[in-house]
Structure formats: structure tokens, C-alpha cells
Length: 332
Image (tube, rainbow, N blue to C red; front, side, top):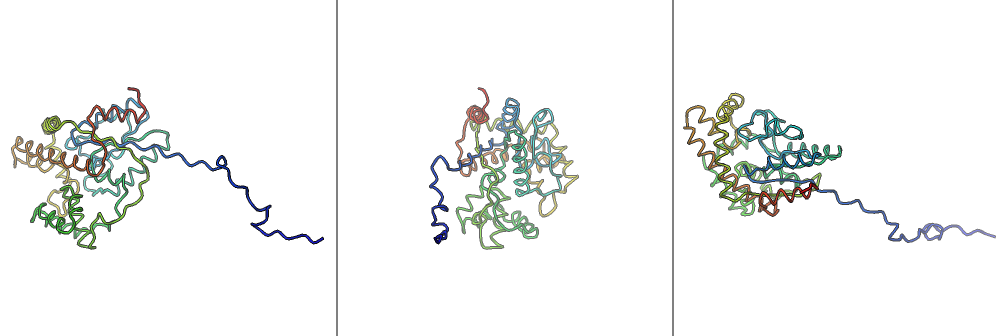
């Protein structure tokens, strides 16, 4: 008798039974989001984050502040001191010298590596800070814009001094109102946007982004406006009394503030006024007044960014403490 050859996938012996629902490979559970705590400057986010981390016992703090990265900038950045950091590992603080131009791409790579390492050790990261473009890059990925050109940047720095921020913003507004709103009056973002547009004919917002390495949950808060303004004024006075002018003089001895293009470190809020007070070019009371005003304006920009970019509910400090405690599974 002739044996009939198998017909391959049509042969009953080669036909797999239909997969039952119970046989399906279970999907990987969604990763637990990494927690982010953000608030305007002087709101008390450092104190809150340290208190929560101390209570949790297994939380490590990843800074999201563009100027805490610099060694030696302690007073003027309100950097948490050794006593505050004791027993709670902090990451992305004191990782660059003042003469380095530490950028957002370096930050994101380092922050994502820190978060990955913390999770791999069975501990929990808490990202804390108020630098909008750092947090946006963590949440949304890095923009795929061309690399910066030092000569073009220097020319734009000179143009900013000659024409002023409003004129440059108006140039962006005339071409792309949406891009102008995205700038939030941040001089660094304005210069970068114009650099990219003049070189490529496209605004940075028109480029895609890399894929974020982690998922995040944002807790954002702010004190009442009057309380925030009082906190800013009182903190500014304390910082000048603690030696901010001397720190600014030390920074000037390391990095010349007159260098063009302007060193990144000299874009830190308040150091120009603190240096002027040290040199006797500005009475200290006037320097305090100017820094207080500039800090209030910066806090308003941060609030605008939180509402427009993060789209996270803006909580009170107490509400933020309770929400983050829940997400960290802490006892009330």
C-alpha cells in the first residue's frame, strides 16, 4: 500500500490546536511609574522630599535642577547641605565643574542611568526639581534637533544684548505663535530656537523626540502666591547673609562672566547681582531687591510651565505631601 505524503501545514499532524484564553502568554505588567516632585523655587520641595525619603527608608533622590549639578555653587542655588543629604543618597548634584557647559542631553542620560541603577538595586527613585526643560526631556524624551553651533550661539548672545528678549520673542511670534508660547520667556530656549530655525528653517518644536527610558508620575504643588513671595524674599536675604556675594566672587575667579558666548554657569539666577554687590557696584539692599524680583518672575514662569507643559494638577503643599506619601506607600 502506498503511504500518502504529509502535506505540511495542512496535515492534521502539523496543525496546532487553537490557543485557549488560559494558554495565552500573560502580558508584562505595566511598570510602576517613577515619582517626580516639582514646585516653583523656594516652595519647600527640598525639605518635603527629604522628609518623605527619610520616612520611606529606601528612596534615593535624583535632582532635576540645572544648577545643582555644579560644584561650588552652594549658597546661591540653595543646594541641600551635607546634613540634609546625610543618610539619603542624592544623585546629579555636584557632578560638573563650573567651567563645563552641562546640557540637557547630558542630564537626561545621567538621570536615566541613575534611575535604572536605583531600581536595579531594589530601591526607589524620587526625581525632585523645578528645571522645566530637564523634566520635560525626562517625560517626553530629548528633542531630535541638530547639535548647537558655538559661533551661531555667540552671535545670538550678542544679538540678545543688543535687541533684547522681547524683540527676539517677537521674531519667533511672527513665524510661529505656538513656538513663542513654548519659550515661556526663557532666554536660553529663545536663543536655541532661533539658532535652530535660522540654520534649518524649522523650529525645535517641529522635531521629534527620543523615547523616554522610564514612565513617570508627577506631583506638582505651589504655596499660595502671597506665601510664595514671602518665602522668596526671606530666602534671598538669608542667602546674601550666608555669603552669596563671596560665592559669586569665587565663581568669577574660576569662570569669567564676560566671556562670550556666556558660560552656562553664569546664567544661574542671581549671581550677577551678587557679584555686583561684592564688587561694590551695587548696594547689597538693591542687589537683594533685584534678585527677589527676578526670582518671583522665575517662579511665575515655572508655574506657567507646570500648568501648560506638565498638565498635572497644581496641589497645595499638604495635598502634595499626602499624594506622594500614597504613591510611595507610606503610612499617614
